[in-house]
Image (cartoon, rainbow, N blue to C red; front, side, top):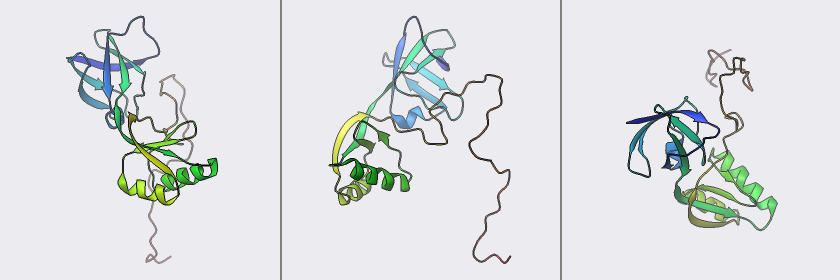
Length: 170
């Protein structure tokens, strides 16, 4: 079985395509099937998200292109940029992954969120489309490379954090 484990920026030739929904492109360990029918194992650094068009080199030197599969999504459009911003705020407040497009948002199909968005006067259209959500402020939109330099987090990471409850006495 081909093992894909190295992300590359370019390749002289592409030897296959791996079509995956976003949910599987978030996994660091995965068994999947190429478009050709060949079984592959994907091993990436934990936290890596494979994006449409990414290239992975296998243990035998072959290069496979990642293709974002079409998924059940909602496209969210609004009459004004302000209304779309309100929708983005409310989706973010619910920690909902969202793709930000040119004048629209895209989210996974979820009837509860659809009702909320309709209540905000958004136009919500069901569509089968590749889903490429934002990576998040702390996830970064960058690739992780071991360049020999220490990486500084955006915020301090506590080694141990005490949770304070209202019932706790000072």
